[in-house]
Picture 1 (cartoon, rainbow, N blue to C red):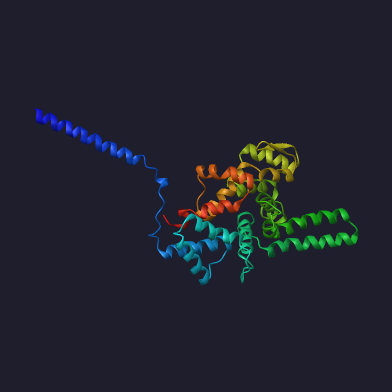
Picture 2: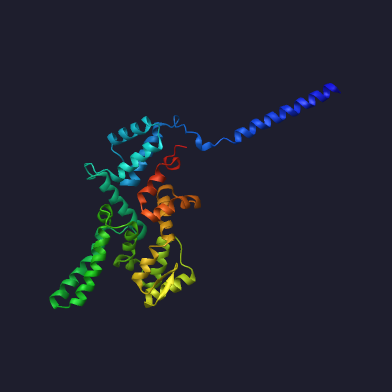
Amino acid sequence: MKIKSYLFVMLVVAFCAAGCKKDKVLETVPDNNVPDYDGVATVIVENYVNRTFIDLIGREPLDIEMEAEVAALETASLSAEARSALISKLQTDITPRQGDSSYQYAYYIRFKELVMARMLEGASDGAIDGFLGPILFGAMIDSINGDWNSYNEKMARAQKLIDLKTIHTDYLGSSVTIREIFRRTIDNEVYDEINMNSFNFINACFDDLYDRFPSSEEFNRSYEMVEFSNASSIFGQSGANKDEYMDIVTSTDEFYEGVIHWQFNSLLARNATSAEIFKLLPQFKNDLDVQFIQLEIMKSDEYANFD
């Protein structure tokens, strides 16, 4: 009996000891471990560089660029800092480069293309000129006839189209924010042509900016503003005409969330999670820095396919 009792006690002690060791392992914080990228093949790194160039400046890297960027990443053990350096270079570098003017200029041209694709079915400058030409011609006739009211109205319409064509240079020069860029895309003849009448215009604004259609109450209140220039309110903001409606829909939390979702869908083919929105939204509302959102996405293992 004593032997059996002794064995029983030893088994209990051994079991408890094993349990204690297991609990200690569970207390380890995974995020404290530095990821090991030694096993990432060079072809995967090349794919990352290629994808980053295409997404940010709209073209593949030249052979010399590919060789230099892969070497820089691998020398830095594919660190987040090295990835950030590549992304920031393509967004901001002003070094003259054959065919691109500079990485920075190519970046803003690409950004404009993506905005136009999202909001205006990819309308080109040539397509915009198709609307602009007749308006300017009509304005010239008005000036000859001395009809200055009609002239000024046409020139105001023309300026909205010109502003659409200069999105990239204005954004590059920091004279407009991302909010103003998207307001321009819904306040012009091209958008009105694509989305004729107030019914389609309101639905398109919600769909393009928020990726959803308005509720019945949101639509009715919007319609009062846009169609009848009556005072109403949506998202807790008051407006009494189409201009004020456009101000409202491009200044809501849902607008800012929509821009974040747009970037996640463009770069990762998925919406941002609630946690990602929670992390990015406060800073984005404060500084309107889309480039920071891109950097956060593109330096991730998910985007790079390094995990």
